[in-house]
Image (cartoon, rainbow, N blue to C red; front, side, top):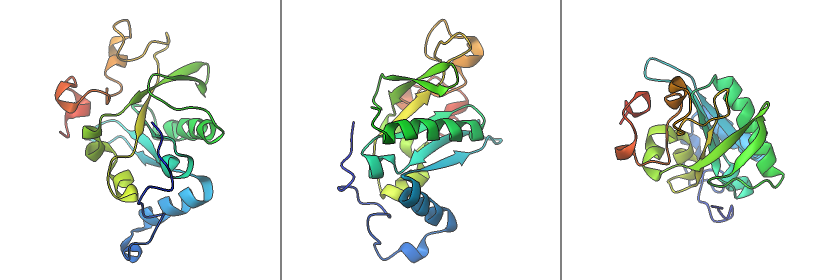
Length: 182
């Protein structure tokens, strides 16, 4: 799924008279998107759940889906999202079902469409940037040590719960740490 960057109605495209109400984080996001093409939001692990990270700006700048990763150290995910974002900015295709090598050293990642019903739970800053969904988001899934993904029956048991399955509607997602906020 691609988005025409000239059609989006986000904070960056136009000041709707409320830019002075933007907080420091929003202004940093705008600045990073202007300078680098995207920004990575890092949400560290806390008492509610594991950490995650996602991009804001790839859809605006490059007409590509935003990217989200879950369940690893936020700084590692930041690095991996920037690596994949740079590939996308250079022309690599990011779409549901594709796999990309060289994002995690020696392993490939798999891309899966995120169901819109998860956006408010995980992508609040992106909603603020774009003003509202829909903007495309792909979950960047990482494999276990045997290169199996968390939805595969052969994946290690602990790995199956390490990441959400955001392509599923929330009502169909297995109950666990990723659904506690629902």
